Image 1 (cartoon, rainbow, N blue to C red):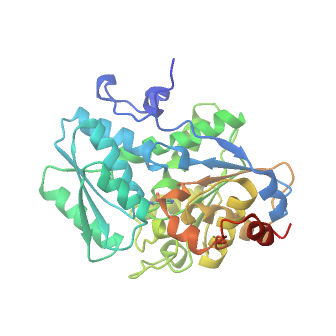
Image 2: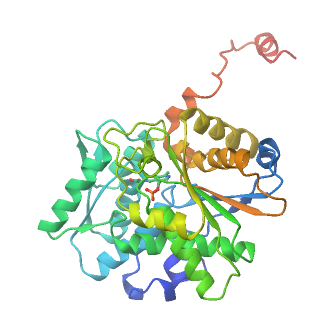
Length: 350
Ligand code: F0G
């Protein structure tokens, strides 16, 4: 039968009434072997990229949103709400349109990438720009949820993380076992918690022989988990992870400790370098925030070189088309040419 999304595929692990399932056929994203990137980094280990930009709204959020919105639908919810750096709002907007549920999104004014803003707007959500940052917007959403009958679909909603754990299931199924290391960006810290839950569950079910070491990376000026305390005004080019007080703080630290992993910080310059490497060497256009998973591997490998035959997976969390500004600012400028063949030949130095 036609592929019908993560709930149908893993229904046993994501219980909800079949007639309540709201899906845009998310998940089943490619796990891509990255040979040119591996060589450029000088890795002897095997490197795979889980390209979550291939989800219906262009990010991993769809895995959790299908489950959170299906559950809201099952509960006959009238409205859902989220705070977002962009991707959660894009995903909530699309799934709520399909479910015919009202959607309200709070975003930091002027701080989200243009593609994401267009997604929230086009699906008919009520879009509210907050004169504040993501952390402040999330605080308002949580307060509102306590007083009004509106379902919060941020990752404080446990269904979100259960949906997102399916990415770990897929990776294990594709590789035939769990990888040795899993690298990913950390913002509100839901995804690292979800992956760790997924890897542990798949091991307990007897599908794998091990669980990976979790490597989480935050932007240098938005790294509360590395610093050990919240940051008031986080800053980074990677707007998706511009977060100073992650909601899933405790479970992210638990994932790091239980998996014998690490959570480290990466500068914006290192993020941009990795972003350009993956686009020019692998033909994969991901978000700046996603590229931190590769920048993290580069940094980690310098101190603790990965061994030959170890398997590393980096999650590329979102599609680069969401943030064209960063791509244009960080790529060679296009040439301008007269409509004359001579001029073209001159430019091409043929
Ligand atoms: N990568 C991208 C592209 C994201 O959009 C996010 C989070 C993350 C990584 C970090 O994941 O929060 O689970 O640690 N975006 C949220 C949003 C905050 O509102 O779209 P996390």
